Amino acid sequence: MRERMVLALPAGSALPDAHAVASASCGGVMCHASDAAARLPGLPAAGVVLKAVAATIDVRGAATEQRVIAVMELAKAHRASPLVIVRLMSSDRYDKVSSPRAMPAAAAAVARIAEAARRCGMSVALEAAEGTWMRQPEDAVRVAMRVNRMHVGVAVSLDDFAVGDAATLTQRMRLVMPKLLALRVRGGAQLLSRGVLAARPATGEPVAAWREIVAMGYAGLVVVRSI
Image 1 (cartoon, rainbow, N blue to C red):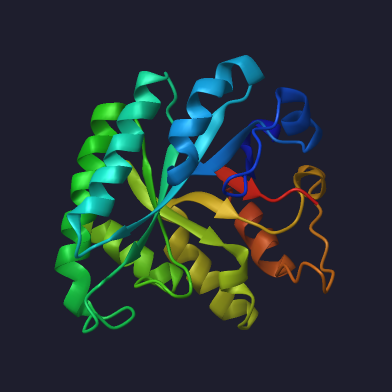
Image 2 (cartoon, rainbow, N blue to C red):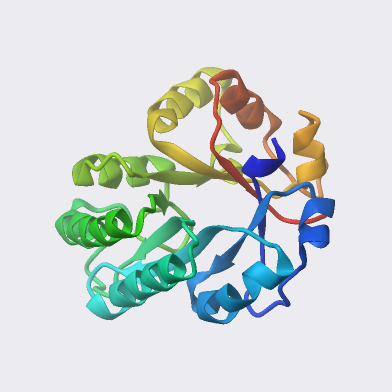
């Protein structure tokens, strides 16, 4: 279980050593693409494995796309093969959230990133989030299906499944599961490694969603924050 756990590092934070990562019950770390160049050289000496890189791209702008590709190539040069977790934004004010208008541009951008990831031996997970063009996990699944690459899937947060009845939850999980490569939770890895997820107001994690995913046999990465 520990090898699947990934500790998310805040932007600009110090790189933890292997002991600190292991103490958090994690097998590696995730950093933001903007920090990757600074963190990668220090990973071997710290004994830390880079399991994931998070990035945001503008589907209407090639510059952000090229920066993500450059990070992948840099990671490959450092013999790292992180999962690339990507959020999609649009600088075009006419591209409403989840609207089909931006779908061709989004799919084309992801396809280019996917091709670079293939060359680097990496996979890509599209992550829906508030304030982005992909706001719901179903949006990310639609883009992944449109791109139609074996190494392109989705990343979701348990917060996305905090509401809804049991039947709706199961239906949504079944839609996401075939493409699910990474799962974000706000609880600590120590709780998850024991198969327990605390439903405290401080975390607000939807326990039912976690149990549903485990029951469906999820075996991908779990990105956590230390508690």
